[in-house]
Structure formats: C-alpha cells, structure tokens
Length: 544
Ligand code: ATP
Ligand code: MG
Ligand code: MG
Image (tube, rainbow, N blue to C red; front, side):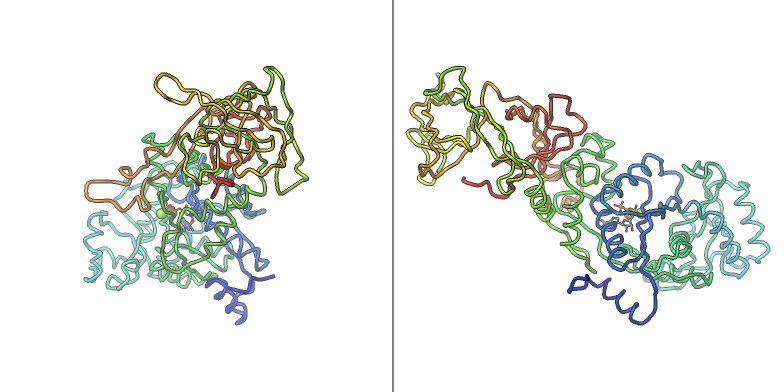
C-alpha cells in the first residue's frame, strides 16, 4: 500500500514507471569505508532501502572503496553491522567497487582508444592553474593532444608502476571551457603506490570517485542512483561516462543531506573528536554515529520513524535534534519497562514502619500494558526520594512534598511530612514522615522513591547535547566547532535504583519513572553492576 503523499523522488519514479522508462526500482547505499556511519547515512540507508521495498525492487550495499590510503577493514565490518542493525537487508547483493577495478581499467583503455581520455603530466598544482575558475575558462593541458598510441603506452606504464606518485594522471577529454568545472577534463586515474585493504598491492593506479561511481551503478544494474545535493553538478559527468561507454545508464537523483542541530556530522570532524579524545570513541553515546546512538539506547525503529518523518527535501536545511529525541521517546514509551530510581537523594524516615520490617509493594512493569506484569518493590522504614521533590518554602503550585504536606509515593501509599531535620549549616538532611498505605484518598502529587537499605547504587551517565549551540559549525574567526562543544554533555553520577535492576541485562531499555529512558550500557556493565546511560529525558514528567 503506497502512502497518499508522495515525496519528490517517488514522484519521479512513478512518472518513469508510467512512461515505461524503467522496469524496476533498484537502489544502493554506497559508503566509503573510511569511518563509521552516522545518522545522515541512516537517512540515506532508510531512503534507498525503503524505496526498494516500496516498489518491490532491489537494494545493494556497495563499498565505494577506491581510495586505498584512508580505508580499513575495521570500517567495513562496522558498516555491515550497522546497516544490518538498522534493518536494511541487502540479501546477497553486497559489492565492492574495488571488484570492478579490472572492468574500470578496460573501460579507460576503451575511452583512450576513442580519443576521449589522455595521459597528462601536469602536477596537481599546475592542473589547478590550468583549470580556470567559475568566471574564467580553463586552458588545455599541453599533453591533451597526445596520440592514442602514446596514451595507451603511457597508461600501461602508469599501471605497471613505472612512474612515481603524482607524476601522471589519466584525464577525460571533455571541455576545458565548460561552464561546469567538473567537465574540465576531470581526472580518471591517479598514481598511488599504496596498499589497498582488499586488492593489496595489485594496483598502483586508482580510479577517481567520478570515474568509479556511475560505472559501478551501471555494472550492478542500479536504476536510481540517489545521492546528496553536492553531487548535482557532478551529474553531467556521471552521464558523460555512461554515454561515452554506451553502458546501462542509471538515473542520478539528488536530495538534501541531513543536518542536525547541536551536533556535527562530517566524518572528518567525528574522527577529530575521537582522535583528540573529546569523546571516548566512535561509540560514545554523545556521538551522532550509529554506534553512538546504539549505545545511547536508540532503536532501529526510532531511527526509521525519524527518517520517515523528516521526509526527503530538495534544499538543504537543519533538522531540530528534538525530532530525533521525540522518535526515541515514542518508541521507548511502548517498549521500556518501568523502574524506580533516585538520582539525587534525600533520606526520608517513615516513622510508623518498624525498623527491619519490609512491605512488598506491587508495581506495574508497564502502566499501559498489563501483560508486562507486576513486580514487587520493597518499602522499608528508610527510603530515598529526589531532593527536588521536597521544598521547605514551597510556592502554592508545588504539588510535591512540603513541611506538613502530603504526597503520594508511587504505587505505595501516602506520606505526610511531620519533621524536617537539618545539619548545623542549615541543610536539610532528613525528613520524618508518617506512612499511610491507604491509596484511596485524594492527594495531588506523586513522587518516586527507593528503599534506602535495599536500593543498589549504580553508575548513571546523564548525556546532553554534544554541542552547546544549535549550529556548532557557525563560528567566528579563529574558532572551530571544538569551541562549541558542550562542557556538560556528560555528567556521571551514582544513583540509587530499585533492587530488581540488579539483574538488568546489558542492552535493555528501562524507563526510570519521572526521570527518563535509560539503557543498560552493553560495554561497561558487569554482572550485578549495571551502568545506565540516559537515552532521553521524558518530555513532561507526569504529576509534577
Ligand atoms: P561525510 O560527508 O559525512 O564525511 P560521506 O558523504 O563522505 O560522509 P559516504 O560514505 O561517501 O560518506 O556516504 C555514503 C552515502 O551516504 C552517500 O550516498 C552519501 O550521499 C550519503 N550521506 C552521507 N552523509 C549524508 C547525510 N548527512 N545525509 C544524507 N545522506 C548522506
Ligand atoms: Mg564520500
Ligand atoms: Mg563527504
């Protein structure tokens, strides 16, 4: 069932299918294995995989691994794992651009023979001078008119390793006066004596992105090559290669890349955060990487819903991080079981409960889902409540605890504050209250609590935005995005959690009632020593 409102890519596809221009929707996600995936990549994955599913088509995962220097197997492995986790299924269609090196080379020879490519001896700097500018046409390379024989011989020598890095390139012979600079004889091959993570030392010439991408799409039978807007003015070149080689010609469609407030998204900047120790690694829960989001407690369903909701745009914009947070709240509100925990405690003595005696309070594991069952939480003479839930000189609208006032303890009963104990400096150290197990009386506020004696102390990590400002890349002179990092993005505290969480399995989602969604850290938790990462706060805490 297709949704009623169609995004602009669906409209293009619908029109093509109606015109019999394409028979099948075949998309791909083409990461370069030079870093970990981030939420922007998730957008591209959900879009490409989603279209293939919607139209009963196919989806390929292809590593764009043409640059030997920056690529590593570690990144390949993590990308496979993250794409799978996100729920995009490439089935048996996993490909590597490096598997096409032979074919790409043969096609280069074909273009040389057709007079459409030549070996150039200009250095990178000279080539830049010859290229011209947006307002000035470029100049022809002095090597542009080499004969086919000469070009074939030189290209063979490039391939055979007879030249040093940077001394020669193979260039497409298009038009040095083209208004689109990408068409001014772009480089097809560079010499790089470097070890490739898959082809080893077989090659010392490597194809450029522009020369590789379209042809890889073509080889795989891709029909819609969906990429981000910065490739819009590479499209004429994409088309030129497919046409000049007379091969299957996929249709390139550009959409706006995802940008999010309060974070940075380029791999280079994320790498810098990791390398300079601003975060603990690629999986630091503050990172916008899939690894980071996973460890923060995000779910694939929340990320899919977010990508669906923000839609597909033709113009660049920045999406408010709150959209992403809303998506995870919505998902976890259904999935996460509830528990009681106190982050910033103050002691309360329930004076009418005997020391040592314990009342088993029945608490629902999920208030909206009776099937989740009930659990017992021990209520004893000494409990802890949140310090913010008591106020000595409380304003009228403060519906929590005040001297002489009453408040409901979640699932347990009602307490009345009879006495406030202070230290010499005047700080409140303890409240003395009377406990009334009768639930039926009407009392406005409800607060959470744990038994002081039975609660576990646990490490809790309170995460906030990675960056302190909405657009961290917007900096004044002499500053970088690093100056906009949020110094309070991580606060580690010891909190007190109900005893049932002793057995909380790493990788489970829990809502601490009134506080937020937490994830049992899969890396640092130990048996009987869970560590909790705050995934998100609650939008509004109930009964405040
Ligand atoms: P970055 O620019 O963040 O360093 P990249 O674009 O170089 O990443 P690739 O591995 O080349 O990373 O990207 C793989 C695919 O993901 C490409 O099709 C690219 O267009 C897409 N993609 C990358 N970043 C975003 C984003 N922020 N929003 C949407 N799609 C993206
Ligand atoms: Mg790239
Ligand atoms: Mg990039």
